[in-house]
Length: 601
Image 1 (spheres, helix red, strand yellow):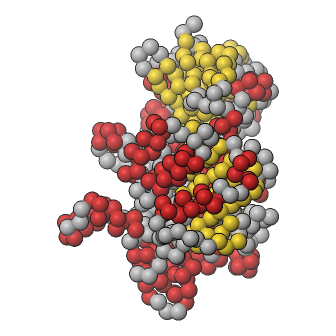
Image 2: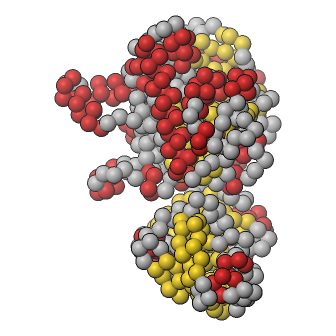
Image 3: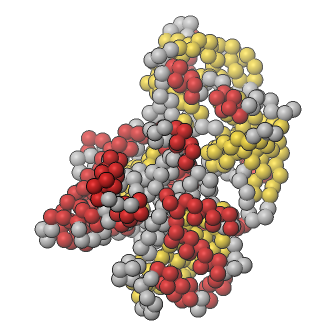
């Protein structure tokens, strides 16, 4: 399948016709520096722009230029990058009039981008009226942010009224780059902790833990976080009120100032182009020197913070126009981070040049505990592949057999060594009752869990023994015990909560191992094939009853020939949804959102 990808940015238009099976562009037309000194290239060759400098005129010129090429006749759909999807758009979708209206409503949160994205959608619908159009959202990857990361510390009634939260952006790039880094490191993404720095005219940094975004620098709008081309990043909120009062600015004037006159542009007083910033700084320009220093300082600070959030990382990844091309920025940012296990190889860094043949390069020293990578991002390919999935699934819905739902109460998995300490050397667990998953059982044996604040007695052990100690609790249990338990897939206990376990023969202090289990569905490979999903996929699940629906986001698919079909949620989630063990559900997958329809036996 070939997909036309239209990526309209604040200062550029990127168009690619992507062969999604070959994973390559067969035709590209890019325009940069719009409204300044626009430059166009087709397949790398310069083109003369014959229209005025107005964005709408250039967009029309782009579509007219493409219409003369045979490749345009072979496309099966058009895909659009949309920056802000708000709370509603948690994954890509077909463009409808309702979708257009919602994207327009969200423009207040991304004034530099959503209106431009809509221009591309409307022009494409005019040129290709019968072609399926797909919107792929920059915010979707960050829907996995835990509440502690996405919640603003403001009155929660106001927050809920207006859906005020950290949404995050550049998600298409962050996700794509994370998977490319995992591929380069020859590891599954579900085993890695990464800090990904997307640095261009817009800049953001994301902590990716086992394939999920768990922290990101941009917030409700793309203004928050790092210093950017024309946006300031983090500001004291009091500064906003000060400017309104002392400059007499309207909300529109303030919005224009924050989005177009700050960042590198505001600091340098000359330019928002990092290449020019570095050039002028070398010539002694103090404004550009300040801009460079503030930019690098802010990024270094965020990297340190995100390494703390993750409890360490396997790699720090640089991408985007600045991240891929500025060895000087990378070098300055990595200075004085050796104490965190991050060691730059200066010579390797200078020689980095990523391209389609070598999309990932490493510039850390051999003994660096944390790898330093540069990855060539390819948002257009990522958008095209996601759109292909949507287009191929259009108007098809698979009815899937009923899924049993299980509520997981707090429980413990133990290693051989820990079991020996708690119950005596060589002790074997005895079966209280078999569990639904083949070979697993609830044991007669129980332990006491002691946290900094309280304790739980008679917590059941589940067998058989495991390679890692793991204590699974709910959010309510977390607060009762006083333990900071991250949401994790089973087996991922690195940097998780600590507790003491007490048995009849002894006690063990676990420095890590306490988690809140990521809600998930166990599937046999045959079930996964029926559903059209694969291991590590993330789906949305709607639990519906007669009175109200409840949507579970970020439900993990776990596939193994050792599993039986079953959805697992914890006691808090079961209580909230009024679901009990023994109920069943039906999972329906199609172009619409994934739905689990609850039914009482």
